[in-house]
Length: 106
Image (cartoon, rainbow, N blue to C red; front, side, top):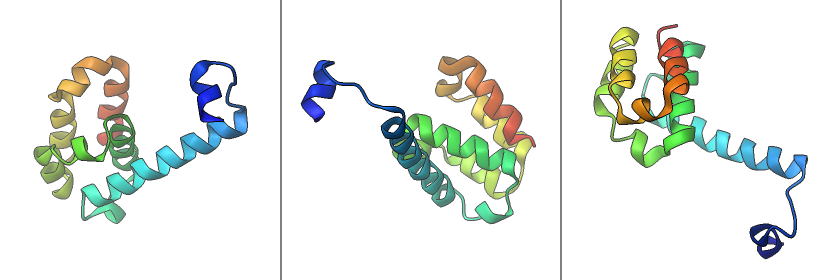
């Protein structure tokens, strides 16, 4: 029951947590796919970076990063990595950002 979860009287079990995570991750991947028209030509690194950013900040915010979209669209992953580094999000998330920058360059 939702109210019991919010009040702390009940906890999610592993299966419930995994289900919620998978739903959120599927939504993030769908967002990342729609973010760039050339998704199928991207390697696993750039796909992973975009999905992770979408997972963290949501589709609405990801879609505001037009320079990142342009860089990925041109398959210029060095430029895309620099765009990620320049995001305010990157400054807040330290190691997560470093990981996504590294993935974008793969």
